[in-house]
Image (tube, rainbow, N blue to C red; front, side, top):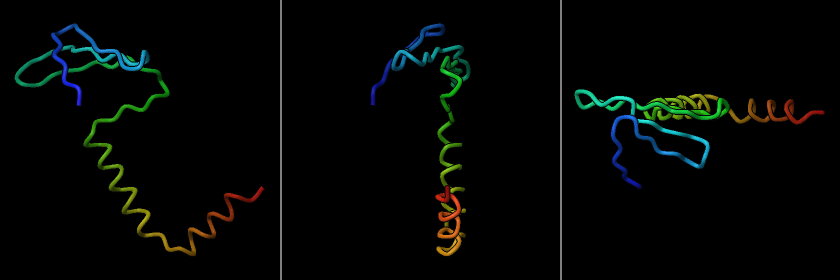
Length: 77
């Protein structure tokens, strides 16, 4: 893990595509601004974990026969 210190108004550039700027620091909370391509998904970590958990739960409810049938429909030309 890379750890950097930034002051308000300073930024970090990721892969020449994303700029992360410190907007504000107040009461132990850091506000960040992200300048990134519109097609790039940016999620808070806790939301990403929630989505993964929901996907795992949903996939556990589908039986093999249903998946096989769906697979056949998708691969038909």
